[in-house]
Structures are given as C-alpha cells and as structure tokens.
Amino acid sequence: MTVSTADLKITWEKLPDDFILDEEPVENIDQPLLAAALREILEIAGLILEHILIASNMGVCATLNGKLVIKAPDWFYARNVQPLVAPGIRRSYTPNLEGEIPDIVLEFLSVNHYDEYSSKPTLPPGKWFFYEQILRVPIYAIFEPAAGLLEVYRLNSSGRYEVQQPDANNRYWIAGVGLFLGAWYGTKAERTGYWLRWWDESGEMLLWGAEMVERERQRSERLAAQLRAAGIEPEA
Image (tube, rainbow, N blue to C red; front, side, top):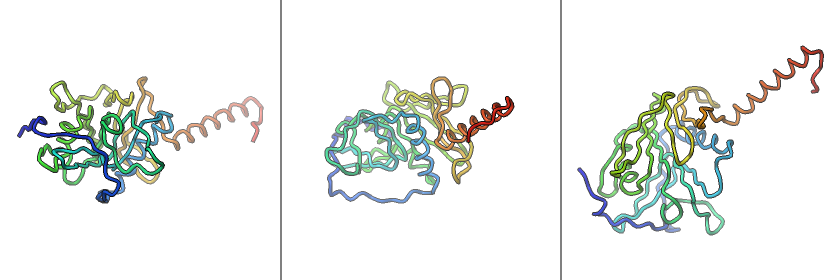
C-alpha cells in the first residue's frame, strides 16, 4: 500500500519536558555493545566533532497530523546539531528543529523482523516508513549480528529506499560520515562474533582503543628486540 506523505501534515516540535518516554529494555546484551563499539572507533579517531550527535536508543521525534511520533533507532549519526540550551541530558532529538536529518540510521535485526521492515503508514507508523517517508534519512542500514549480514538502503531520487551493493571488500561508503562501513568477525572484550566497523578511504580499518594499545605494545617489543640485537639494552 502506497501512501503519499502529502496526506500527512509533518511538523517538527520539541519533546515536552514532562513527556514520559517508554523505557523498553534492549533485546539482548549484544545491542549496546555493538552500538558503543561503533561509536568508540569514531571517538578515538577524533571524528566526533562539535555539533555531531551519535546516539543509540534515543528518541527521534516528528509530529504527524498533530500526533507526536517517536522512534528510537539502535544507532544514528547526525550533523550540525544545536547544543542544549541549558546544561542537562539530551532526552530526544527532533530533526529540522534541533539539527539536520541523521545521515544514517542503523537497526540491529530483532527477533520480530517485521519491525525493521515495516512500511505501515498509519499511526504509529512502521520504522521503514518513518525513516524513509517522514525523516527521509539518506541511508538506512539493517544489521543481523548473528550472521554478520549488513543491508544498506539509500534514498533514491524518487524518495524510496533502494538496496545498495557492497564494494569489492564487502563494504559500503557512508558519505555523511566519510567512511566505509562493513561487518567484521573477531573478539572485543567478552564478545566474539560479528561487529560493525569503519574503514577510511584508503581501506585502512579504524582501530578500537584496546587494539591501538596492543599495536603500540607490539611496536615497542619489536624495537626493543632490534636494540638488543645491536647490543643495546633498551631503557626500562
């Protein structure tokens, strides 16, 4: 069923301060780990600049025909976001009022797959319809951690999501972030499995903090071994 957004009055209003947000628990422990790891890479690389908002499970708001609609993506990235007027905690984000539409919205596939692919146009609208037709997010990505499957959809000239094909390295260019996004299998902390990671334009994978520490340790050990081979005892 196709519904034109011309039938909807879309406005952008701030979430009332006294609005009580639903506190639904995440489905499993993997989701916050995956979201935090994706952000950590950008932070360590110095790519989280002023006015960039990266959040997980934060309500993104729009008002449709006078009714407030809130979706909480598993992860999203938005630029040119206005700072909070007063010190405090950001409880929600309203695009076009507080900053730009997110460059990318990411959902981790749930037990009920219908949620991530729902084009339901009536209130409350499905996630797919909300991101595509209301927010018009340029890139919508869906990740299945168990299988390491990443689907990336890009908004085409007709205003519809079109599935994207990965490059030769099985990665996707995310223009708003300026990096490639792809799945990677390995271990971080207590979790071994598939993760989402970033690569730069040259194909270099951006590292987590623990990986950078380990790389420096190995570099120091190689240097010490070279010095000893030359008859020089390295300083402690």
